[in-house]
Length: 106
Image 1 (tube, rainbow, N blue to C red):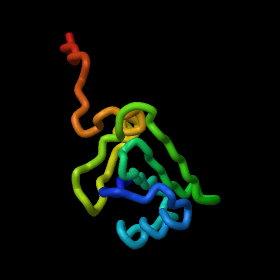
Image 2: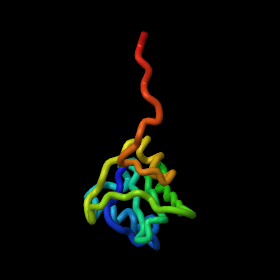
Image 3: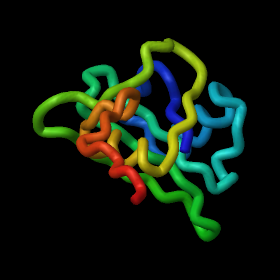
């Protein structure tokens, strides 16, 4: 899963986001990777993913709060599946904290 750093025009659809993946991220939108884009206000997110049959475009808007995004203006950041899950929930995926301590083995 790759985050496109910086701000993306949320009016872009399949073709516009695919072009951004190719030109800005220097990657192949048909690779099977998930690419995430965030709007200027930070409350809207779009994910672009090739599932083998066609492109999928998921959009989510938070009613309160903003998606946590890297400070970089350009480039990309890799996220794990767990980090993507936190991102979609509006949780700060950069500094997750364990809520329980691991128990010692007997």
